Image (cartoon, rainbow, N blue to C red; front, side):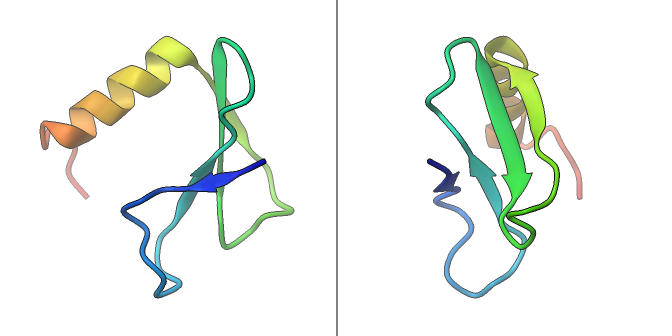
Length: 60
């Protein structure tokens, strides 16, 4: 089961989905292309990425 980011909204813009049911890894995909590829990250890498976003350390 894929879960859309709470920041994505409903306007069809840039959306990220994750599949949280996999121990130790986080599959990530573009919600606009559900049949396309997914990137699988280790849980620690995903946590670091999300933390950096929350701290505003990543630029567009």
